Image: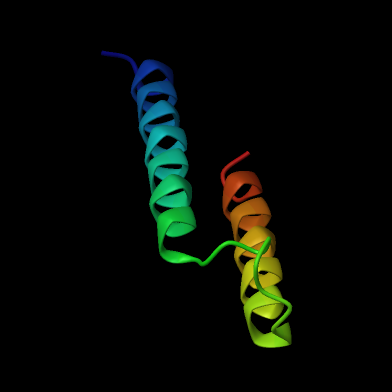
Length: 59
């Protein structure tokens, strides 16, 4: 296996893992629809920012 094929395979694995982690994290964060609490809104915003950062980290 060439290094570029191995690197591409690893990149696909990381992307899949990031998606899985993001979906799992969404299950842990309460829904915003019923919660006017600013702490929960901050938690959602932080999670969204982290997901953006993580998805761009290996590009």
